[in-house]
Image (cartoon, rainbow, N blue to C red; front, side, top):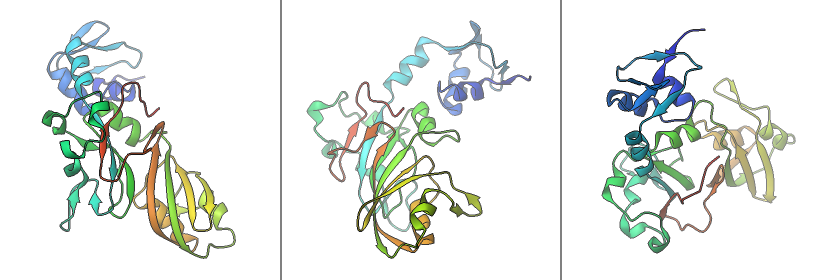
Length: 244
């Protein structure tokens, strides 16, 4: 057994992201078995107890997570080809039912706000933006097990064994896909439930079985649902609301 960087251990334990861990270590807000650690790159044994000081916990508590119903035509990450970023929709005017929110809008909530997972420019639905590295890791970390649910409208004639292949047996870029839950809702709409998020995954899966996606909407990430949130509107993650 070897010692491991403390920031890595903290991320693996879901305490924060590695970047946040480094920032907390620099400030002297991290303790290993009760001893303050303030040197970047410090290591610890995997069995050692790591704790955060009150200042770090307060900072985490103040960080917000936002649920947005992203419209088609907005990019979730860096803007390109003249399209606008989804984060530009996070304005006081677009806050849904502000009187029911646990937070009042503050422009400080935009600082460091980043999407946790992609949603293609021609797709709509639930997009999570967060200041909290713990949330980001839950949703997009290499070991994430959060299930995402999509409603997908399609055109074309599916191959004879197409539904079975969508559920298990397809590959993208030479890498086998994990098993998925896929079912018909009606003659032109499928429901997908996935535990991975490869680039344009559902569209490319459908192409392999003879279908063309003409509409895609994400309606759930873990235990958080899009619900009645209108297109282009956003809300704060509610107190007690969790993805896992």
